[in-house]
Structure formats: structure tokens, C-alpha cells
Amino acid sequence: MPWVARGLREGIVTTRYPRRPDDHGPDFVAAVTVTDQPAEGAGQGLAGLCPTGAISVGPPVAVDRGRCILCGHCVDARPEMFAYESSPGTARLHRRLLVTPPAPGDDDLEARVRAELAARVRRFGRSLHIRHVDAGSDGSEEWEIAALTGPIYDVHRLGIFFTASPRHADVLLVTGAGTAGMAEPLQRTYHAMPDPKVVVAVGTDAISGGLVHPTYVTRGGVAGLLPVDVCVPGSPPSPFSILHGLLLAMGRLGGTRPLRARGRG
Image 1 (cartoon, one colour):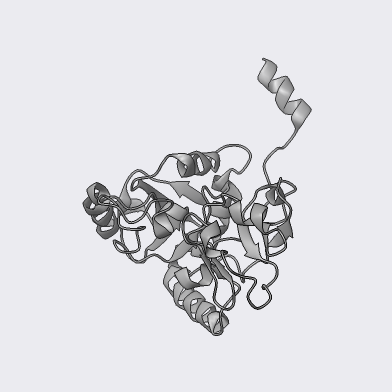
Image 2 (cartoon, helix red, strand yellow):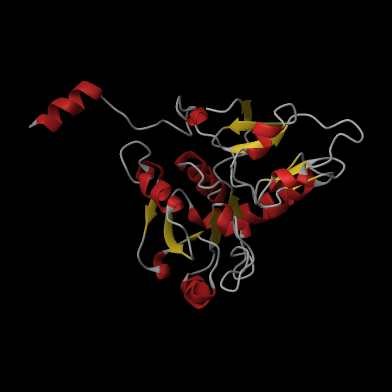
């Protein structure tokens, strides 16, 4: 049986995240950040660098990660101002908190939302059951979600399980831009779930509609259909980022993990 020999040769491959940082976590391009503000008059044309309008010229210049598709146009054109960041900790508990640099009052908003969510999910304990619904995805987020159940990430070790029935689910994991045809099925799934429940929007499409929004069949994300509790940006986000969002939903992370700037790779 060659798989036995292979298993003995490779040993344990399952990541130890979040108990320990994973060696491969920083290899994923997770987000774009603003590294420096332009001098007066030097910010012309910045907004035009982004095909989804994620860059606002302010002042200050800011990037909305909820609209960023990680195309890299801004980093390539203005590397002195924009850079890639890598870390699992990309998920946020409020749509406004996806904008970087943070605005005044964001810390208070995060603390308030975190406390409200913690009070709601206290009854989850150490176990979480997820119902995933594709509301018009291009399929990229589904590949990353599927990886969570494999031997590398193995979310079952953390008490996280996927269920086919919304009546057994604690979390509604939503991907896709929120198409008109999926509005009713998505809402029926949400209302079939018992309370308390949490909605996690995975990917830029689910958060803001993605590259093309709005259109005659999309609503610019799923927030207009459901109350979203956790936003996981990225196009698509890595399995580490999705796992970070689920751990936030469970109240098992005490604070926002800082991202680390890096070059393209």
C-alpha cells in the first residue's frame, strides 16, 4: 500500500494554525495596503488605477479591501504608495473596517461589534456547523472552502463542520455577488437556521459585488439580502483567511491580527 509508505515518509502535514503561525500562511497575497500618503498634488490619477473603484483619494488615500480584487494594478503602478500584505488575519467584523488606513472611531466600532457578536455566539461553545450557499460565485471561493476539509487545514480538528441542512447550521457561509435568482433561496436558508446564527460573506464578490457591479442580475454583494456579521475579503481569499473569519465568528480570536507588508510573489 503505497499511501501508507507515503504517510510515514511525509509525517503530519496538518497546519497548527491558529495555535501556532503557519509557515505557508504568509505566502498568500492577502490584501493591499497604503504604505505612504502622496505629497500635495501628487495623488492625481490614483483612483483610476483600480478597476473596481477600491481606491479613494481622500485625503487620506485609502483602499477598500471589500472592493479590491487583488489585481495588482496599483502596486505595479505606484509601488512607493501601495504594497501587498500577507497574513491570515484579513476578516473583519464590519464592512467599514475593511477600509485602510483606519478612520477615527474604527477601534470603538470594532470593540462594540465584537462584544455584540460574542454575546450572541456564546452558546456555540467549541463547535460550529456551517451551511454554505453559492449566491452567484465564479467558483474560485468554492475551491478554497473545499480545501478546508482536506488534510492540510482539517477544520474538523477545531470543531468546525459543514452540514447540508440549514436547520442544523450555526453559520451561513455565503459566496457570490448575490444574484437575483438566488435572493429567495438565500433568505429561505437564513430564516430556516435556528438562533443564534452568524452570516459570513466570503470573497470580494459577496462583500461588494466584485469586478462588475451593480448589474441587472446582481445587487452588489449579499449585504442587501442578509445581515452580514463577518467579511472575508479577497478574490479569492486563501483558506487561512476563511478560517480566520470562521474563528472570528466563533469568538475564538481576541483581536485583529496585524498584516505584514511584502513584495509581490
